[in-house]
Length: 133
Image (tube, rainbow, N blue to C red; front, side):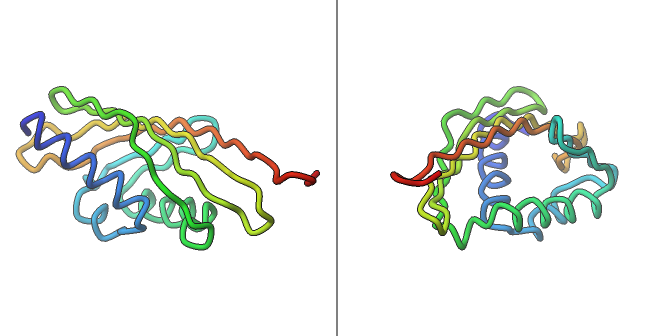
């Protein structure tokens, strides 16, 4: 996969996660795909990865918290790519929450260019509303 195509593909994957477009991942993961969220969990197998994505995005509640995604950087080389970004949201109690992430993607070496593995580093930060505890 050419670098520009890889960058575009990874942007689509990043947005698909935010949009909860699990059909994108069902189509673009290898059968033996794996996802490692460092310090939290590791899953392998396409079905298991998609189910873990469903659980993770439900827990984050992007829709209910008026979330906004910002991609700070995307680097692609060969069959690997990295994306750094953040997701900012306002919680129902008025607190501001930001999820900072850094994802490393490895695609299979075949013509299809499907995601074989990815590793996520995630840090959450909450800023309490004035007067909150």
